[in-house]
View 1 (cartoon, rainbow, N blue to C red):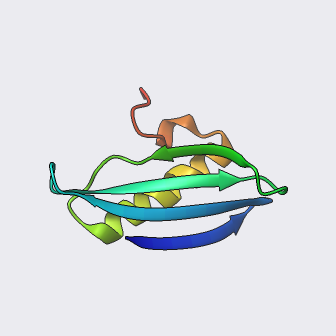
View 2: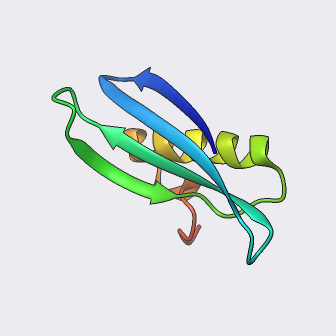
Length: 78
């Protein structure tokens, strides 16, 4: 499991990447914490073949959630 932390617009984004042996895909998990350290939102990005791409997707989705850009979230109709 790979983990990454970043600050963005007053939130802390915690990202981890896990390999799913059943699907052989990497899942990017992201948790968004508010200024008090409370979880504001948590989700997964779509599973991908490469670990670094799953981490990047989770980062993009977390920032999109903070920006209210729902078109960039997994499973959101465009």
